[in-house]
Image 1 (cartoon, rainbow, N blue to C red):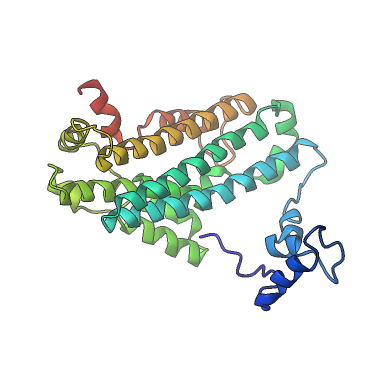
Image 2: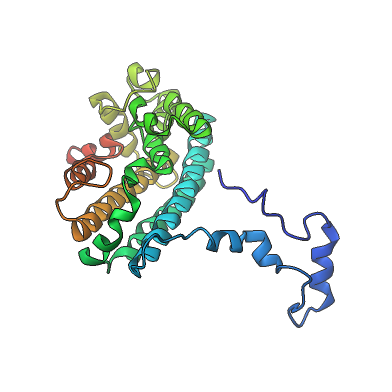
Length: 295
């Protein structure tokens, strides 16, 4: 979860301080401070700008690091919103879930657009600093792994790379063992009387989700009643918005790697291009896609 607890605004301990500062000069900004400006202090700007530590003199390396860090921040934001949507569904709060999914969609759009930061990086630029990060690979991102677990793409083996990080292991294990976003939606449909198979309502949540003809039939029943205001239909479309953006993310990742690395092995040891291509072909929330061939 995102937090600014450790980056307190100077006025945090003085509830009247910020109000006094605003009222002191309504027509002009405050230009004098005894320490770092409240903006820098509140958002931790000095800390943020100290986190880019290139290991080579290649000018393209800082942009690669910044793009990676931006994506990690957005992973955390999307996770927060997907978890909130899942929890709302588990509480039968569809309007609340729709609101969180809308916010997640906006964050996903920014996340996908962040690939543009790397769009003009050439293979020669990348190769001049590639060796500097050794075996580091996006595959090792626990922020991204949390998103995959929330989407239902689960594997206990994917926690293993983080075994030396107790807090991360705990977070990933919790997500592994709980229903994901789509699971929560199917459980809601079941409670609303839709014919969701029982083996999709209660199952081993540590296993990846697998498509079910019975689930497709349940969603088809939802789409048969697409009148304005049908919140289950709105939920289906909101989930598809999530799924579509995940697919776009995977495709842009694939293209970015193809453009800079080609078919060479990835830094993490895998055949990066083939793995990304298979991942991009995997439908998220599969029945919401397959039903479109039959409704």
